[in-house]
Image (tube, rainbow, N blue to C red; front, side, top):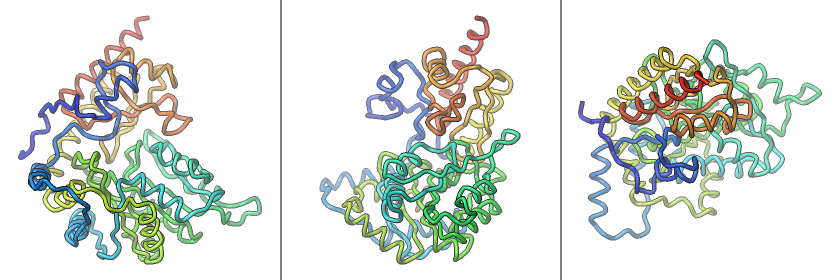
Length: 400
């Protein structure tokens, strides 16, 4: 192995949201933070060296992305996801959530409807409701500890009382792979979903930030790669931030094959004056996509070992908590219903009894107040300590 993911990197004192904000978020600083979706691993050495070299220049004026930026994106998508994109399709956003916000504001109007599939990463809801649009909540179906799209319900949700298509439905925000459930959507699922959207002129905005973290026997498929028809209605959002520990550099690539949509998006980007990015973010995304393959392959192996350890630990040591095994991402969705705790009580259990920081399920959907999200993008040592703390807290609760 070329990379040591067991290295214990001290992130405290670096203005880390995950580590340094624990006191503010959880009201105590003696917890193990396993919440915010970034990893505790150093970025690839090639990325670090490129940033160091640029920093040594000493002048950090206005910057732009050269043609090599787009070439790195094109080559990465071809190698990793078998998707051939044209250089003209590629644009930029300082993060995927800003891109979601731009898309909602650019391609819909106040009062329009936007589909999300809950439980879902909280900004999906906030960028819709915060901009005066209406949520169409196409809730995922949980069967035998596995999530599925409920597309039959979706067909009903986008029709009006007369059985006709509701023309206020303008957009679907797709999370692929899905956060927090970890589903990696199959080709068949994506085709069926895409057909519904194409037939009804619904724009798909696909957040594919977790697309590079996919486990054995599963494959991420960019929905826009499936047909020309889907490419025309899809805006795909990718970033190396989750895969290469680069979230703080706020850089992402947005792929928009349709010329008119791309023009409208770029105009919104220009009006907002957020299209320049920053020097180090531009360098990092390009370098990661050029030379990060070995790092990523080794990272996935390490994360899958973490995942196997985590699933096995809950099964043997904490059967009261049932993990939904993710097919991608380093996030594990935990069903805590057998603990008999919900909402605030469940969070107090994790924070004050187990002293482990997790994301409350109710942030992803009000119906999931007895779930939490756990981040396993950490060293095995940290993961083990966190799980042992949860085990001890459950045992102590059972004794009362």
